[in-house]
Structure formats: C-alpha cells, structure tokens
Length: 148
Image 1 (tube, rainbow, N blue to C red):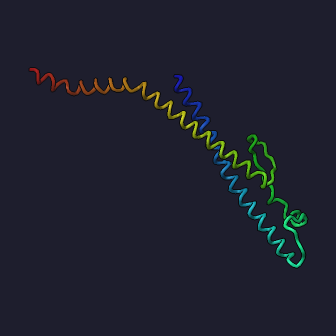
Image 2: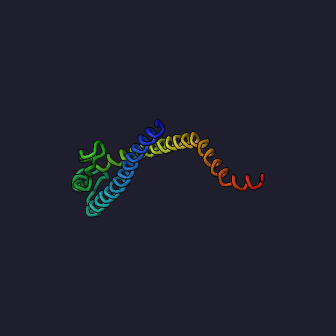
C-alpha cells in the first residue's frame, strides 16, 4: 500500500514536471524567435541610418525597436497569473527553470524505478510459487502415469 501511494505521488509530480518542461521549451523557442526578430529590426534601423554616426547602444534606435516584440506575457510564477516580461530577461529564467525541471524529472524517474523494483522483488516469490503450482498441475497427470 505504501508503494502504491509513493507511485501515485511520483506519477503526479512526473506529470506536473513534464507539463512544465513542455511549457518552458515552447516559451524558450518563442522567446528566442522574438529576440532574433528584435535584433533584426535593430540592425535594419542602424543600416537605415548608415550615413549618420550611430553608437551600438544608441537609445533612440533601441527605443524605436522596443515594443510588443520585446515583451512576452507568460504565466510561469503561477498558473493563470499572467506577467509581462522582457524577452531578454525571460530567456535566462526559462533556461534555468528548464534545467531544474529536467533534473527533477530524472530524480522522479529514478524514484519510480526503485519503487517498481521493490514491488517486483516482493511479488517475485509469490509469482514463482504460482507458476510452480501451475506447472505441477499440468504435469501431474504425466507424473501419475509414470508411477503406475
């Protein structure tokens, strides 16, 4: 009974972390695409001002490019609670959360392996007895015929 409860708890945690990893991967992909689009817009804006002297960190160009592409609405902290975060700060958070969730998945899968192995170790002798009894009943007629 304890192994069953442990298995159920581990499977619930596994499903939660699987969903979290899938969400982080999709958000990371979308954030990377948005960051690439923002960088392309910045390069295009700098190229259009090629005659003028422009610094790499020019605030006017950065302010012109900043907009809906530079921010994403995500619900990472709590399900259903949306937050607007900049893509530049979101990517490191997503990478660290993805790494943490992946390591937790590995630990939970290990726990499930141990629980499964323990259940099979306890069930092994009972299963062997059942199989031996079945085989003995099948061969019982031939054993009786050999004795007569």
